[in-house]
Image (tube, rainbow, N blue to C red; front, top):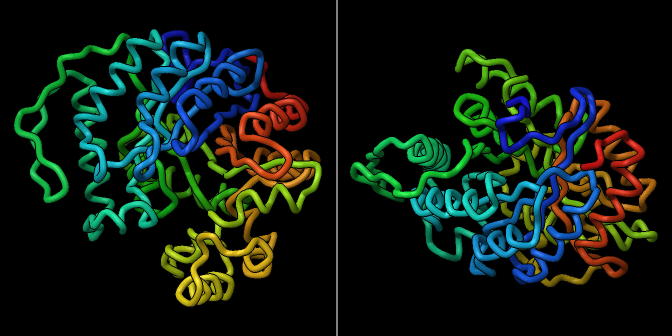
Length: 360
């Protein structure tokens, strides 16, 4: 999807300037989400702020509404929600509301959900791609003013419609890293959020290949799809401190994701098995940072994260852009030196501006 004057993803950037989106988790209190969005709304290279919708944390849509009230420029959306814990029709109404209160700045990101979140809630995840496919179809059809019927074990709709007309055409993004999900995004969505685990030159090539195949099946080009390479982000003057900010989440993913899936995106299977074994014995959640450092090498962390000193982060993002990443999403994590807002503002100044990103 190419930004244009009548599209909410328009940034005014030149065609060859890299684009950047920020992300924060919904474990952050809504007031802090709004403060972060307000800070990024003022002359930064970030064009959007996405808020996670994971587990039993703060309500994502409440946080987005607060952020909309305190910003004027930056786009806002889910990054990402899923069709299991939130019915796609309910999500559609919420995003249409966000588009109204933000005066046309809403986006929606949909993924299959993480086993980290879904397992404790007892969801059957035997057909994640099918659930996501029907979730995207439901959202897109409802936003287009159509009645939707769907009958799945996970959710149903019987000639459902929404009574809210968003003021703009809200772009729909599909999020994931597997080939089928990436292909689905290329086929059905306006954009794809590719990650986590694809924050490398090999990952960019992998994402472009599978998104491109999906786009071709739909009679489109990959250039018609807004492909966002997604990475966790932590920056500190002490590079180890920055990586410590993301290592537990990387370890949790390595412990839960199928080894074959991790291998397909370039993760060392030996590392993945070692982390899974440790998780079975002791649990990675709450493990000592020193243990996690020993388990997850820096090279593996950097498959998932832009993390390190400002110079190291600049090098990592520059490599992504050189590999063909035209749009990079950075999900902020705090560390012992910086809050999430401070990480994003540091990255904006020390990484994005030197790369020629357009200041908004």
